[in-house]
Amino acid sequence: MPKLDDRTPIPRWRMLMPAMVALAFLPVLLAPVPGFVDMPSHMARHHVLANIMADPALSRIFAVHWQWIANLGADLPSVLLAPLLGSERATLVVGALLAPLTVMGLFSFPAPRMGE
Image (cartoon, rainbow, N blue to C red; front, side, top):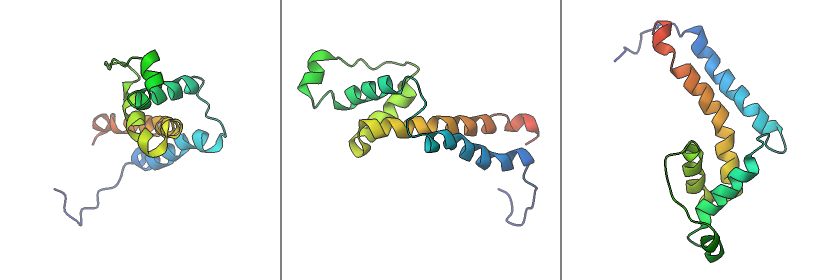
């Protein structure tokens, strides 16, 4: 564990991370309509996944078979947030977090290669 008076300098690239994460949020914050072309289909899927057990009309038309697919990383948080925020807002929140989390991941993986 490092000492409290240890004053090792913070690498410059690490100082960029908060600014890059903030910049990644800008498109979502500034646009009145999300710029994701397939957002309506994600919203519809998240609505069905979150409400299929409570809505007999949905359960007559759709069946849910959970499996490992590429969208599962967005489906699970959206379904869990839907009771609190509603399906549409939950999808928007998860969509807004995708770019900043990607930036954070890009900054965290190369750390061993940059001498840390």
